[in-house]
Length: 285
Ligand SMILES: [Zn+2]
Ligand SMILES: [Zn+2]
Image (cartoon, rainbow, N blue to C red; front, side):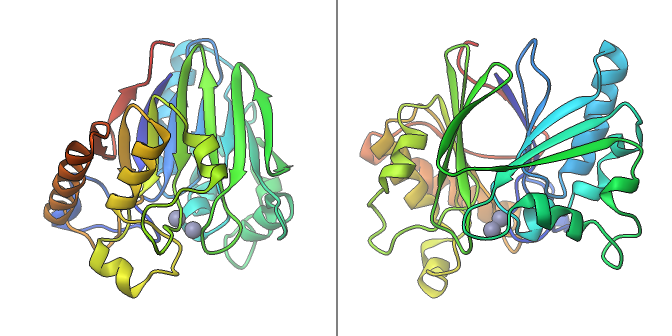
């Protein structure tokens, strides 16, 4: 399994001279495994360049331009890229979106309303490609091609899920938006199930501890809590994700150094911060 980050920010896309190294697009991650259609985690503004990358892959390989999507929730920063996916213009294109229904209206109802006048000039139906949307039961475990997918609700502002992906002996947990508890250390059983022993955990690390003190009910985590989850669940590598749009490259360097020091002091796993454009091989498969 290989992942490439096309969007690593939370809340809102950002662009500034001191936000170049980590990137300014919101959540969108490409997961690739030989012999499987591309799998996309979230449809943030990173989906636009991600779609351009896939167009090149499909043109080279001659594969049908079919992609699967796993959506964590419906906040703007996770869906804003949907109408800007270039392969919507390909009549052979097919995007199959899976997202959680939960106790609120699921993506089957809400996404077609979001890509619709007056918010966008055309509807999803009017693009030349085909978009299919499935509401996922939560919790559940299902197969998506060769992937085993586990979906569990996680604490956030509004109904939100995390995913665990397994294929060919490799495993990835993706918790883009996850509210840390006030005690800063306890880990919900559902989160433990998603993360236990994974090769890579991609986890919300939006707020510094000082920011979290003022925004403890805004739905996000600190880098320190991401380290605690990784340690408790025995994960092998941790990537900090969903960076705050107000944080500069320099601040993110400091946040990363702090999380690395904490993990080292606790005997936790290696920590990196997700950066737009970087690819990572996960496990052996
Ligand atoms: Zn988000
Ligand atoms: Zn959110």
